[in-house]
Image 1 (cartoon, helix red, strand yellow):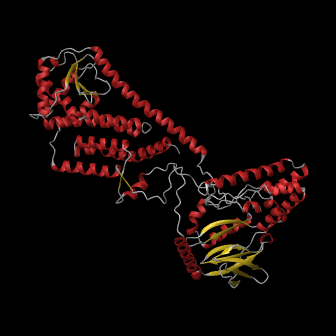
Image 2: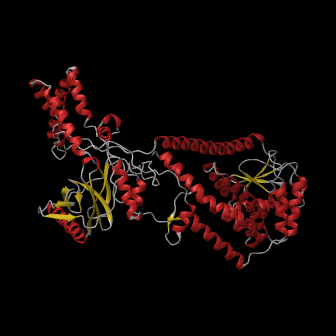
Image 3: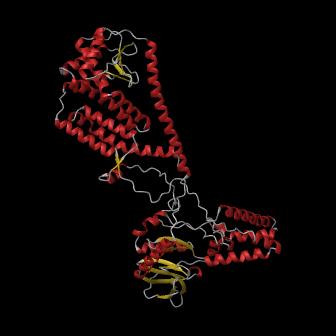
Length: 623
């Protein structure tokens, strides 16, 4: 998965997660305005915008697991999918696909130690969808950011071309007095321009106050003072920077309508927070006079200014009534209101800026690279194997093994055991605990196993039989299973759901799964080491398959003359030792290439009859 796709999936999960915070704030907004005041509501909106923009989260495990399960969005994983996980089999049916057994290997293949690692990838159609959506998201984000930047640049060019009228002395004095009143050290530049119809603030790095032509003459000195204090409060509070953060969140999460709603409400709450700031810092405080000043500005307007990258005193006439109502009921901050706002802000920060600590990776492997192999010393390797043997022997000594049933499905003797109340199906050559099944005596209802270490034998008698109906295989069914033309290559995959749920399936359910695989010609067994048992599959008719393979190989070899037989036999894959020096590996590879060319030449020159025998031999080993 590419970096763009990974970024898109993380953005999608982040948008979903923070969307719950936006919904909760939408529900609590009106009560919070009355309880804590607009400044705390605006601070919460800014915290949400920051959570949408900043992907970094602090690890916190105190209360995260429950929240993460609730807030998490199930998106496609960026990790490779293993073959067992990519299986589409259902845990409800637990029915295996009827596939061919493992390929029988020729003697030449057994001598090769060249190992190939198959590339594992996810669902191609799913990856194509993710790639397309990720590209669409990137184009939308870049487009919105570009439009914002172009609008700001266009405003500055229009201001430079439109020309400015000189500001009168009363306006300059009022701005200087307002800066002193609010504690601003630098007086912003004053621009008289016809581009605006009401006072506005623009410029994050170089702030400028924009006034319409003749605006100061339309207001009384007291009303002009309140208007200037409002715009300077935007400057003191750095509201232009705050609204830029909101616009960036909208650009990144443009596909989420909740983010656009949050940005619009945050702008309204920001205006009310600015009003609250003016009333808390101005001298003397007169909410009624401030409200009358807003009404005077509204009466002098033809239409509110809608210039980008600016903040005006009146941008929406509909919201002005709400602002005046808030101003008329203004209350100075109290300890209770401050503590309530601080607690809510801390709670939103804990939810939005923390995550459950991630588990350390199982190994040092990195994407696209094969992890380095740490070689053990001979003493460490010996100690490791001895510990494995001791653990295996300890488990084998405590295992309770009981023979439950014996049958001959398809003429192959099969035995059903219970190992610690877990059903196991075995045939001759299968592993049972730490021994190998050497004899299944159907007539005498017993099974003999032999330990590979000390050749000790153990006999299991059918003392507690279980009523089991083994499947019947007709000769035609067995022939179809042995035929490569009707089967897919490779062994059947055990459904991922089966391996995950195996520990919670009861004994009868496990037996039904084993017999279901057996009906399809496969023996679902359990391989047990020192760790938990794992499921494996084997082909029931391995002997028939091996015999057919050898018979067809002998028939093909008999059709070759002496020269062909010598060239073909000498063309098997040579052994290339991976731990040999580089020069030796190159020589071995060159010899192997020359030998394979000889073999390919023999195959290319086969007669039609020989080719038919060759194809039959190769076809019998495609499992």
